[in-house]
Length: 446
Image (cartoon, rainbow, N blue to C red):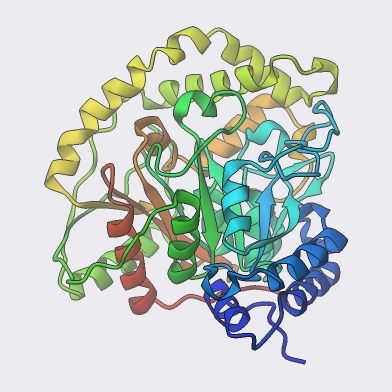
């Protein structure tokens, strides 16, 4: 029997619509791969094996099967979004183990499009950190299991990278889609504000957090994003010559960028220049206060989400993070700091269509029990490897992670693409060009 695990979502959906394979066969193949591989990867908190097979049969019986964009496609959902009939633990022992009565709107849209939810993926507690570990396990990078998959959508990224599912749903409040995608060799897009329904935690981290897809191909990314946004993200009919700014300096003062990531940017820039785009070095005018602004928003978002939870059941790093943030919630809630940052950076994006940066500053930390380590050690580890993502949550502008090149270990490397509001389709087009110009491997594992 043909295995559909490791195939793209577009391939699977087409085969299901044409009745060359049943949704049950597709889902069963992915469940078998999960059973074989996830013990060493730690992508899932909960695998919905029986429920997923039942729901696959329901998809097969739908009268509108031939028109479903995600017909029979197995998907994973980050464990901070409600899935009907399942608890939403948000990576914490302090959250209630109560089944959700309704799907989150993004989950409902995936199901309406024919997707089958096979499981809920691991996250760090309250989705705070750029590494994924806690009481439900450690999510490892399938390309290099000695390293964390990243966070906070680490389980979702690991699931896609290992071919356990072709698509996963995650979200991004300070880089939580782009960090694990960069580690695991995936494409992802943090959409601009209000493109995809949010509804994450208590207030979406003051409007900074956005839901988005993780995929192995830009075609799949475009497909899932269209479902989540209930909108079309069409390929441009004519290719435009774009002005692309290349920036290598870390937005956070004093954070060095390692050679593999600067080399990845140079490789991508060279390929785009040869393709006819106007590419030049230009550093955005990041303020020196950016690190402080990011820390205030990061901790304040956690303070809001931790309110009402039993502190004794939270990890020490989470308790400290929330305690630090409580003093900033009122000031952060005004949005003034974010407004000033947007005003400062907007002129840069009137001169340039796209900003190209490293996705990360260095490879991800070793996988391990980071939730048992001190707050400051976690802060320093996160800031040292992921300084490039927070500015675009603070502004609310779209940003992508795209695989380019490899690390010395053989694990994937990546670049980040950023655009002004409303340029999701343009960024997807640039990513498609890079996919053609700079080939990358799709999935890890045997």
